[in-house]
Amino acid sequence: MASHLHRFALLPLLVLASPVHAGPGERAALIAAFEQAGVSADDAQSQVERLDAMIDTVVEQYLEERTPGGLAGAMAGAVRALPPPVDARGAFRAAATALTAGLDPQCGYLSPQDANLAIKAEIGGIGAEVTVRDGEPLVVSPLDGTPAAKAGLEAGDRILQANDTPLAGLALEDAVSHLRGTPGSLVRLAIRKPSGQMAEMTLRREIIRIQPVKSRMEGDILYLRVAQFSATSAAAARAELLHRTQGGAGRIRAVVLDLRRTPGGLLDQGVAVADLFLSTGDIAKLEGRRPERQSLHFARPEEFLPGVPMTVLIDRGTAGVAEVVASALRDNGRAVLVGETSSGRGTAQTLFPFGETTLRLTTERYVRPNLQTFEGVGIAPNIRVAGPGLDSGDDRQLRRALEIAVEH
Image (cartoon, rainbow, N blue to C red; front, side, top):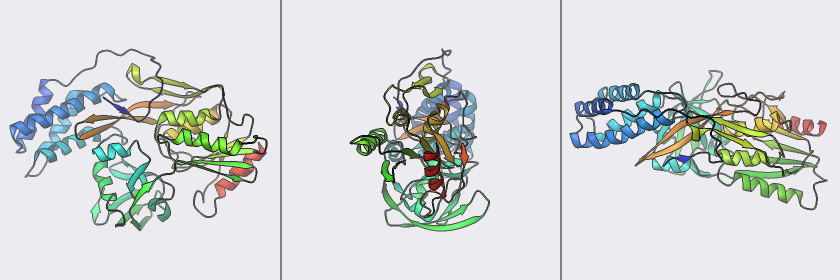
C-alpha cells in the first residue's frame, strides 16, 4: 500500500485504460542478468520479484508513461555492467538505481530510515533537503538553524564531494548516506555555487529537530515563519494565529508569511495553512495519469485576519508545497509575493514500500489556481528583492516585505 507524501480529498477527472504489467520476458531478462553477474538462481529470483513489482508500479503510477520493456532493459544492463564480485544486494541496488535514473530527479529508492524521515519533522545529518540533478547532489533548501544553514549552504549549491568521496553519479540514497553520520562527527564538503565558484566547508553533524512554525510581532505586524510542511505544521500555524489574535485582531496591521528556504512536504498541510488566510477560491489542483491521482483543493469559508494586508516571502529554496501555498495566496488576490523566484519543484511524490526498500515516485503535477504550472520555472515574486535574506543578520528581504505589507 502506498504511503502518500500528500493526503487529501481526491476528485476523479479522467478514466485510464488498464495498466500494462511487466511480462515474463522482462522478468527472464532480469533473472538472466543477475545470474550472469554471479548471483545464485534462488537469490536472483527473490530480488527480481521485488524489482518486477517496482516496474509495475512505475508503469502504473509514474507521472509520465513508461514501458516495462524499456525499464527492465535498463536495469538488466546496469547489473551486467557491474564488476565482479557481485552479491544479490549489490545487483539489486544497481538495478533499482537504473530504474529511477531514467525518471525525474525527485524519484529514488529509500532505505526504511530515509522513508520514515520523509514524513517526519526530525532528521539527522547536516540539515538540508537534497535531490540529484544532472548526476550531482543539488541542495533544494537548507533547514532553519541547522549546520547547513549556519555554514551558508544555499539552494542551488551542488555538493560534489563529502570528505574524500566524490558524490557525482551516485544514487540519491547513496549520496545522502555520505552526508549523514554520527552526531558530532565532521563532514567536509566540496561545493560548486550556482555561479560556478568552488567552495569548501566543514560541518558538524547533528540530530536535527525542526520547529516547523514560529511567530513574533514586528511592531503591529505579525511575522509567521513556516519552515517545513510536516504533519503538525497546519495545527501549529493555527495555534500561533490564535495566540497572536487573542483579545481581538485590531492591533495586527499586516501579516508577513515567510516561506523562504521552505522545502516540499505534506500537501494537506500546505492546503490547510493557505486556507487559514482564504475564505474562497481554489488552492491547488493536482494532475496525474490515474483517476485517484487527480484532486482539486478549495478554500473553506472561515479565515483568519480577513482584509488585513499580507505579504509572502519566497526565495530559491521555496519548493514544492511551499510554492503551492505562495501561489494560492497570490493568485486569489490575498497576498503580494516578495523576494526571489522560487525553486520550481512543481511535482508531488508518493512513497511505495517494497520490503526493505521504498520507492519514491513522482505521481502528480501541481497546477496553480491560475491554471499554470510552475514545474521547472518557479514562481516569480510581485516585487523582486535580492538577498541578503533569511538568517543573514541584514535581512533586506524581510525589511522590504514589512514595508510593502503596510503600504497595501
